[in-house]
Length: 364
Image (cartoon, rainbow, N blue to C red; front, top):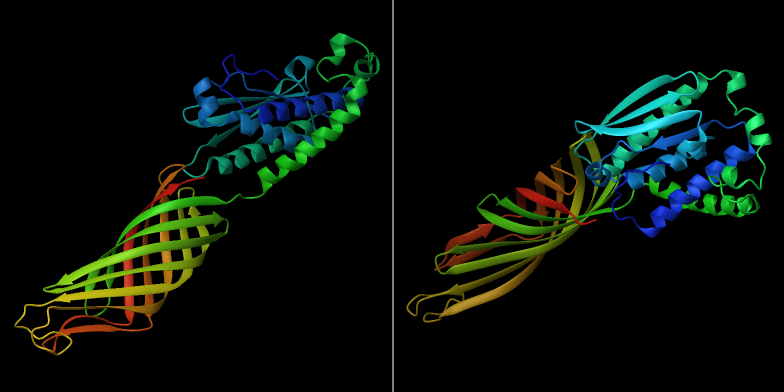
């Protein structure tokens, strides 16, 4: 397989995986003439696109799926039956397939959305395999296999012929190692991984008798189609001599709905605890909540249960950053009223309605 002259730094495991895939594909091509041979040409991709499109991971996934589909993936210099050429033009990845010896060609274009790059990889792999199948179906029956003279006359000990496929005595070992690597990569390709986000939010909190500003920190774990969330929030408030500070924590679960390539919706429920702290500082000639004249202050803490429904609309700005707007009607187990000289100065109901915005950053 041909690669660009300047290749970004690759992990050892990635290089070994591709090498094993090629070794197995070449062995199959040499030992069985019934499989259509396919090569993947990446020479038209620049260094910059090599990194931004993560071509190494794409090549591994495409190789695995082609072999699973019954094709033999071989180096370009073996004159494959079908040649796949990948290139990047104007922000889109183009896959061109040519059939030898008829030179029949087909072409596909895959635009890169604002969602996850792995999702785009899955689309590229799917369309590339479908393109190869279309070209293979156009082969005459007698041309579907390699000419018998080429593999049968090829001596197993010929250094020039055995170089692309590895040494024939090690064929079974290579095949065994390949299937172990293919099984590991199959999980990576077909199973949606967990994604973890951290978010910072600012919201408006309405509780019938009053409204306050609220700020929070969100932890979000997603494995389609489900989302698990954990959040911490606080809401400071002040009225004359009364100072109130509320904070709480919630956990929840939601259903993730993909509306468009860059737009999604989470619908779920949350439960948690709400801690209410107040402090009242009075002048010496004012009667406080204790009812005794001359007191200088009063303070206390209360804890209540909290439950809410939450809908979150998420706009994915790029692979790692997203912005969301959300609304969450809910209930607390207790209401609160603070009085000074018998006059209510601060209160909130059991019902609460939250609405805000959140900036989400993907951690991994």
